[in-house]
Amino acid sequence: MIDALNATPQEAFETLLAGNRRFVTGYPEHPNQDAARRTEIAPAQSPFAVLFGCSDSRLAAEIIFDRGLGDLFVVRTAGHVAGPEVLGSIEYGVGVLGTPLVVVLGHDACGAVAATRAAVADGTTAGGYVRDVVEKVTPSVLAARAAGHTEDAEFVAEHIRHTVDLLLDRSRALAEAVEEGRVAVVGLSYRLADGTAHLVTTRGLDLSAGAAA
Ligand SMILES: [Zn+2]
Image (cartoon, rainbow, N blue to C red; front, side, top):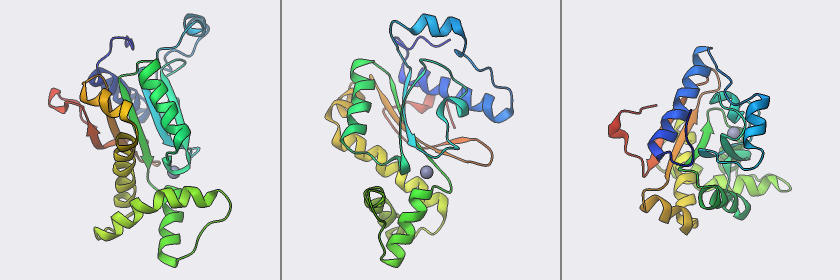
């Protein structure tokens, strides 16, 4: 049982990875999903991680990390694109709830990345507010193309790295929390077929202690 109020970024990350391993191997424990937990946390929440991921229906946060009520403060948008409301939600998780870890969760075969690659390649554009999603993924796609990447996994990883950088560039509160060692930001890439989450990038996390995705 993780004590979210006193957990280090490292402990939070290891807890998350342990849950993903249980999910992958087919032995989930479904922690914190009963009536006792519901009652325990009704007065106040203290999640151990902010999870900012793609909205993709196959990326259900509490399922793939084998967690329950009150564990994760979840923010999800198509292609994990971040605007003011997303940044405010993340700052709330870190600043008010005191979570020690922020996770950016992307995945292979991401529709938002694929749509943006197609739009960039064809010079086309999406309609309505989907256009805003495509426009926010575009810098990542352009960077991946400029680096000579061609594989889906490389484009996804580039977009995850860009998203981590963007959060820290835009949010002074998050950047300061990382500088002070209170919070780490990690970018994970999830594989839909086997359910594994792989480390793409980290800020403020000491991996020498042994945690590895
Ligand atoms: Zn996606």
